[in-house]
Length: 91
Image 1: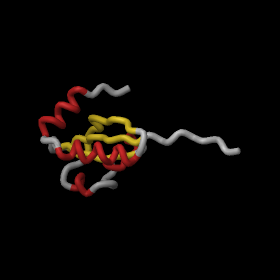
Image 2: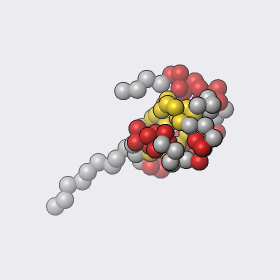
Image 3: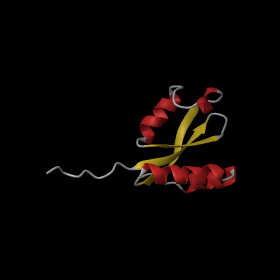
Image 4: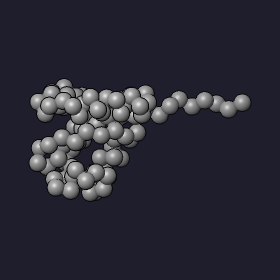
C-alpha cells in the first residue's frame, strides 16, 4: 500500500519590474521563480526592465485553479492589480 501525498500547492504571483510595471505568473515555488526572473531567465517580459520585487502571491490547491486565477488577474487593469499588492501581507 502506498501513501498518498497531498498535492503540492500552486501560486499566482505578481512581480514588480524596475519600470513600475507588474508581471503576473504562476509557479509551484514563487521565490525560486522570482530568483529566475531576477537572473534574466524565465520571462522575456523582464528583458526590457529587470524584476525588482515579488510583491504579491496567492495559493491555490492545483495548477488548473492557479491558471484560472492568473487569467483573471491578467484581465485586471493596473489600479486593481496595485490594490492587490497594497492589500497583500505575506505569511
